Image (cartoon, rainbow, N blue to C red; front, side, top):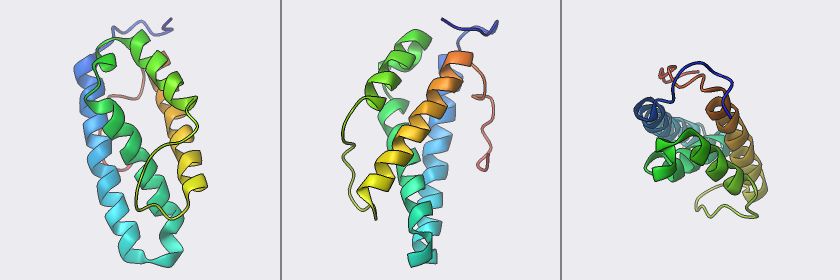
Length: 119
């Protein structure tokens, strides 16, 4: 299932999800302070936070194949419950985009070592 020679590191994946969760919360606060023109940035950061919060403590992160299956299940959902977003459709589009990015990372087992706030 994986095209990478590196073994799956669940601790690294969890650390990456935790750091991205914290960065998304900071990005939301910054976008909120910028006001009306930063609505899309707020929704994008809210989507990243939702995905990371949903997956960071899930047991499926321990197994690469299980994580990929869970991400595909999430992509297939019709709605993503969230409060405080500016545009539900835009938020859901950003959630799906972020889930596809994460699915690609999980499948190739690359990118989890990049834990800096700005990527």
